Every structure is written in C-alpha cells, then in structure tokens.
Image (cartoon, rainbow, N blue to C red):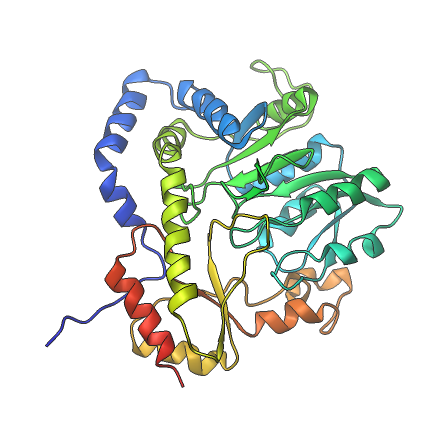
Length: 368
C-alpha cells in the first residue's frame, strides 16, 4: 500500500534544516560580538538588501507594519489626512495607517486581485496625502500608472512590498517606483526571518534620516529625542539570518515559479480558475491563489486528501468590524467581495517535493 501523502500549506522547518549550519554559525557570531541591537549585522543587511532591490537607503525595523507606519510618519502623514489603499489586503496595511491617526480610503480590486488603478482618482479628496499600493500574492500593482496619478495630485507613494520581494516590473524591482517602499520579513514571506522583521527603502536621504530617528525614539544619539518616535529596531539575530537567506532569494523565487508553472500547466479542472501574470510583470508567487466556484465543497475535498491551503483573504477590509467606522458596506467593492468568496491559496514554498506537487494537482483534478 502506497504511503499516504500529506502536503502542508507551508513548512518553515524544511528551509531551516537546509541552512541550519549557516544559521548556527551566524548566531554564534552575534553572540560572540556581544552586540544584539543595531549592530553590524543590521548595518550589513540594510546595505545588502537595499542594493538587491535597487535603492540607496535601507532602514531595518521591527516589522512590516512598523515599516509602513514609520514611512507614513516620515512623510508627515497624520490626523486629518487620508491614505488610499486596497480593500483586498492584509489588515496590517490599514492598521499602520490608523496608527498615524490618518484615515484609510479604500479602492476595489482588478482582475489580478490588485488595486484597480482606474478607480484611484475618484477616491482622491482634498485630504488625501498618500497612496499605499499593495503588491499582493507576489505580483506588483501597476506602478507606472500609480506614479502618474500621484505626481498629478502631488501625493506620496509608499509601496507595500510585503509579498513581492524580488518581483519586477520590466527591469525594475518592486519597491523602486514609489517615494518609499516597505517590506515584511515574517517567517512565511519569500524572504522570511525566524520572527518578525521589516525594512523601509527609499532614495531620499532626508526621509531615510527621519525614519532612522523614528525607529529609535526620535533619537540620533542616546538620550536626546529630536522628534517623537518609537522602539522599532530590526534585531541582530534576525538580520544575520536574513543575510543568509538573501543570498538564496533568487533561487527560492525561481523554485516558486517552477511550482506555479506546474500548477498552471497541469491543473485541468474546469471548475477552478488559475491565476494569470500580467505582461511585463514577473510574479514571484508568494501565494498561488486559485478561485473555486463551490469553495466549501472544494476545501472539504482538499482536507479529505490531506492538502493544506489558506485563504488570503476571506474578509475585505471594509467588511471587518474594526473598520465599520469608515462607512463602507456590503456591495461597496463588488470585485473584491466576490473574489473573497472564491479564493484559495494552494501550497507553494521552495521545499515542496515533486511528489507533493503532483498530489496537489491530482487532488484538484479529481474534484467534481
């Protein structure tokens, strides 16, 4: 009798196992240094990561959420201001806006589950201060159009790149189009730490300097705060691990693309809609998001066959109780709402085996 196959939606232990010796050596180096906060590992990672993406400055912080909040504050966003973003996003995008005191203004999705650029201008008011396009599932929003709109209306653009580390638009990487960009290194990300972490990238030295102050209580040196700030510093241990993984990021992303290619070529079930990539945009498949017409029955089929899955995200921001005060209601954003009832994220991480991928495909194709 053949061995039963169980496919997890994600497994951090496999990647750690492959690079454990390097991780142990890096952590020993940090331990031996006696410098655990704001040391050489953070400095080196900031330089290496900003160089990899293609910006001049990198400011490591505690999380991707803090990265967004600090970037917004650096551009002067605060109480009374509005920030436009997508309703189809993770909650941290809007919670970061709220932490500045500003109000999120939401926009519906397009056919790729990204912010619909055709609907951005109608959301702009006299209070609009900034835009946060969210590069979702591993594919970038239309930054050329977004920057054209932003320049026309004198708005700041902060790219939410939590799910697009390494993706490109043409020859430029995601995170190099806006006035700043923010990345998350949560363990499930394409470049994941072994805990929380984030970074702000920019080409603006003044903004970089403000962000550096904001992450450290508003200080340049100890015990003198120039501005009100926060405690949000990327830890030395996490930076050391991220440096190891950054050297492998291109191969990790390539493997994700290979897995996605198998799914796209071998899934033949007509009840399942496979994602598409936009022409000229590379997709690094942080998630592989399909749409199932009868999702509850489909999910039960996955469970019976031991295939893990996720839903990213089951509730658009405007339908969550915490954000009722924004004044939206069911029907406000029909594209995002309809998609939220159908989307399913399939297992996709570099360490999946060919046998596991084949099991996922066979399971989907057998669904009726």
